[in-house]
Amino acid sequence: ALCGSMLAPPAQAVRIKEVAAVQGVRSNQLTGYGLVVGLDGTGDQTTQMPYTTQSVQNYLQQMGITLPGNINARNIQLKNVAAVIVTAELPAFAQPGQQIDVVVSSMGNAKSLKGGTLITTPLRGADGEIYALAQGNMVVGGAGASQGGSKVQINHLSAGRIPLGAQVERAVPTPLNEGDTINLGLNASDFQTARKVAQAINAKLGN
Image 1 (cartoon, rainbow, N blue to C red):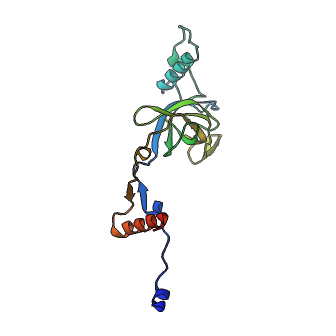
Image 2: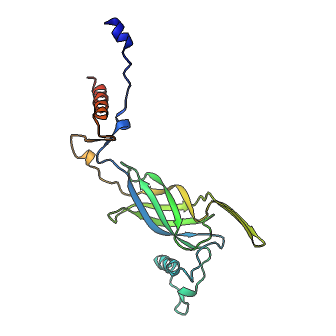
């Protein structure tokens, strides 16, 4: 019996999160439409992108600024502004005040978003509710230069990130806090995985 116990393979400790996930606990995708300002003449060509001019006009109206009636908004050249789509992932259990990263991508014909600043942009979930507000200076990983008709570019300049650029405004309710039981979903539906989960639970309970 002693020899048999010495030859038996040692038990491997397995954490529950390695073989299963808690049902009802998931991240949520957020998206929003916004404007990036402060570009060095590399923004949208507003004559071809009318929604950029319309967005700027709507933003100015919210700030209490109205364009004179003799100015045609379609003919305004806003070379330092670009229309963008902002996306983020809202982690499970995120609470109001927590900050998350956002990705900003040009949706027009802007040449570069480098050096731009995203103005306050609401981020909505699939239900249409606002869960976060994004704003801040962009970090663009690409680089480029042009002179005398020649152009050199590394990676693309039409997308960037804002680390911790959004602040959570609303928490997503989770069924985990509404019951007395926890349901686990196996990463692989087989008896081997189920046995590992049972062993991990028994180890936690001290059985």
